[in-house]
Image (cartoon, rainbow, N blue to C red; front, top):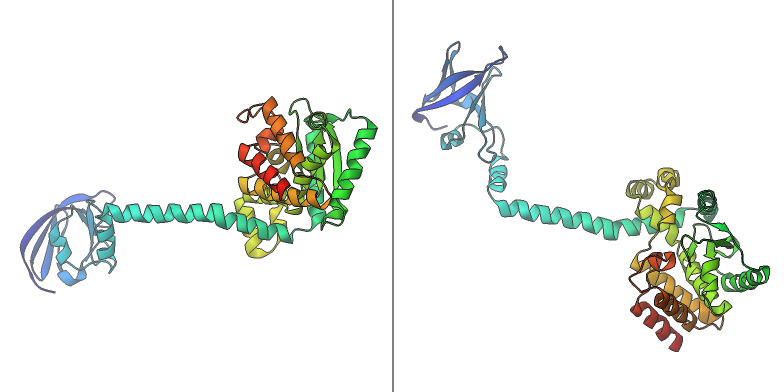
Length: 343
């Protein structure tokens, strides 16, 4: 190391023997550093000192051979002394360039957003494929039981003949589908939520009296049920829960152990009662429904007509009806249903 010319720095010394620091003076001359205070007087070879990295304009520390430290304001002279590590240059360089911090922040936020909007849905889809349908069915049954106990629903007041007609049509719709053995149609009255239909995990589909009353034909009710069948076949309810339980989903993905999902599904009834599927899920369920309806000689126009009529009774921006709230009705959605009917 090159010898330093005579220089003086005012410092604070922490000598490692007493609790309180004291003011000290650092004299630098040639190859020697001389530290002097009221109770301290030592000389050290320069190459035995170590200076902490520069962090902004904060004070820096000089480590002494026996374990004490000197604290002093940043000074260019300190750069000529031995440094603690080789990373100082990079740390100081980054610290003095605000745009580097901004770029790092942007990259970090972008990574988090990509993980949430891309990685997490993919993980939820993979995990849902590994969960047995019997396990999912138990979740659905418990959820429906909880909703009934909370008086979200009342027993259906529909005539038995109407229920039978819809049950028979529903059975024809799901006959031969991958989840055929698990489907169950439940009728409920729900003055609080109004016209509604939704799919629970495990193939349970609930449709309210209020929804059926707003249909002009059994075919319109079956069009709604076809949409909910799409949610079941694509396992949207379970994937929705998993995407809202990121930690459990990632753990199940990495370990392959679905038992880690216990925490994820513990709040499922509440989550499903407030469920609003993503636009992607709704589009997938719509397209599934259009194809299913055509396979049974039913037109997607039935779905479009009912959605249009519901939206006319309640404006598109009115969320007071649960089906409109959880399955947003838009002009584009109605137009796509009509386009599918013409194909």
